[in-house]
Image (tube, rainbow, N blue to C red; front, side):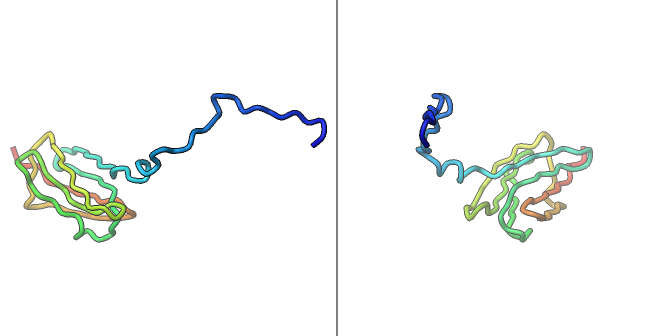
Length: 108
């Protein structure tokens, strides 16, 4: 338009193009460990709604590995627990992309 000044973009507002935008799409799933008096609960982001797609494997008395799918990738997480747990009696539920894994603590 006639008589309008051209506004300059302030230097701190110049956006650079992404050089590695794929790293934002390939983030790791969130895994959270909560400890209760009688059990330990692990919450993990998963893609599959089937509880049978989440696999738990003991490493030793205070460490476990969990395997699951997340955004088309196979994920393996090693989780160190503050107390020993029993894998004889555990429960896995998956709802809305979150797996809840309840593990009973070993009796002291």
